[in-house]
Image (cartoon, rainbow, N blue to C red):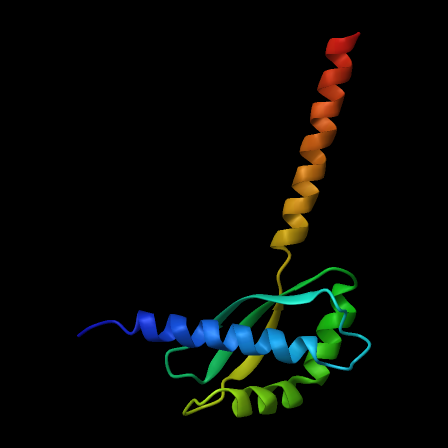
Length: 120
């Protein structure tokens, strides 16, 4: 039997694109303008979706806003996608971008400190 990985990756991509649009249109002040969906993982049976959310700003407040709007988001997702089932959404804070920025800053500090040692 052939794996259905192509189908699930296509569905995951469609869900990610639709979620990004829906979240950008939310009017909840807790959800910042710089909120993006970095990745979605939809189960093969389309029952659940894990959406990784990257936030520039207050992560806890944004996650609370998304949790409170979960019903509206799911309803909007159902109307924008033509799927058998609309997946139950689980929002996960994606800290990989913040981690990368922090590591880049640390590397810059080390390089600047090393250059100071060689100048003297």
